[in-house]
Length: 354
Ligand code: TXA
Ligand code: MG
Image (tube, rainbow, N blue to C red; front, side, top):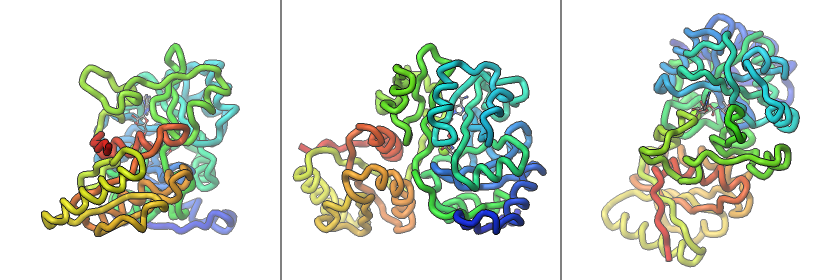
């Protein structure tokens, strides 16, 4: 399949009628369109069309029991896709939609099991990104869209990442530039007795608590790993995720000790002839001597770190390193989402320096 890449400048959408119409028509015809959202790029297809969902799984190489999120462009759409909308969910919709929050509901009959990975629940998100909204609206469909990466790879935060992973497997890629947040949406299960966070994101537990009073984390998130006794509620949690090609180890500890750990481990690996990558922050970048050194930004600027994380993991692949070491972050606020992705990318390998 030949993939069309359509460049669209965000600040002047009205100039791109033709491109947007072409992409919308593609969705209507059952094709696949990758598009930017405020979190990461999505790989979209008609969410109510079994064949489109099957194509999405095939294009990503994704296991078919890992459900897709359906993207909407209007509040009322929820009532068509969900059979029940609890009051708590209405509060969250009012507070955070459109925006980087996905809510899980009991599904209505129109949602095919091909889209929900066989589940009786459906994940729904109303994105705020203007291109995403316009594509959904124009297509006149609900758009099922997982992140637009090959299964297991870091989520794409720029169109080039999508081209890298999916070129030849999708009809259209809309290039709307780098996304804003850089980490996928916060997922909250609204079918549980107490609303439960299945994936931490830009909207934090504290922000949700301010609206609902109470929200809990799925134990699999807090356990920082899933053992076989723990059932993964978001089926996606049990799969290897975000992983760069080279093995990644997170180095935890206080700043002085972290530096000497980096130093020792890098020297050690290099003496074995390995090419070493380091993912660090601005405050120590000058003190790290490795083959590829990337800063995620200011150590205290978690928005910058989120924005840069996935691109940095991909850059390590491009640089062809054999091993990667990364700094660690606190799991306060947005740090929770950052560490969740970083730990998965590392397969939970953490070196405690002390
Ligand atoms: O920010 C985002 O959410 C991006 C953009 C494109 O919107 N999408 C995204 O989709 O991250 P994906 O497919 O990469 O991740 C969706 C996650 C998976 O872990 C999946 O298991 C979970 O949502 N999920 C989807 N439907 C679910 C359901 N009914 N119950 C529980 N988990 C569900
Ligand atoms: Mg994904």
